[in-house]
Picture 1 (cartoon, one colour):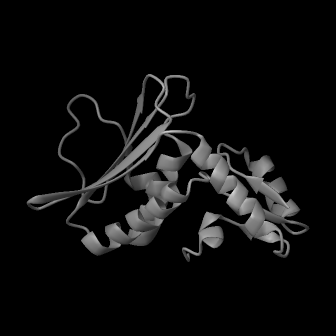
Picture 2: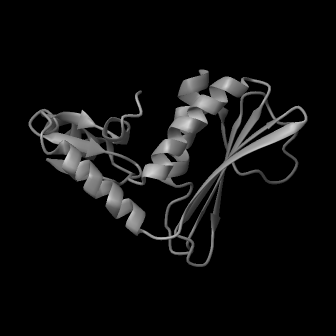
Length: 175
């Protein structure tokens, strides 16, 4: 059994994970935190419920040593929202804004990265609609939360057949 909690795979690396999953059970997740995985589900559900009249913005904060931006977690949030609402991230994702960009296009998903200090991780999803704004935030104060999630995934995998699983499976969050 194997638990993988990282992002940024090259296509060949990902293919090897898929091949290995034919022989052993693997949990592959962009984030092992229970709270973050619940946010993935709630953000997708909220996007579906709010509908197209609400603009979606994702803002993530991490320490000043983090090398990638946006984070894999922010991208997973965006992917889940896009999947729940029929959007295409290749077309609808907007990474930061600068200069005179014009009016916001309907259906955009804004994704923004902030780097500073020793912030472990914070992700906020904004749903801004007519006359109201709804925000969901998860803040990680310690990397221990990721370790606890990985241990939970490892225990869950112990009696599973070969296959590729994710934290939705581990936590019983459905598809």
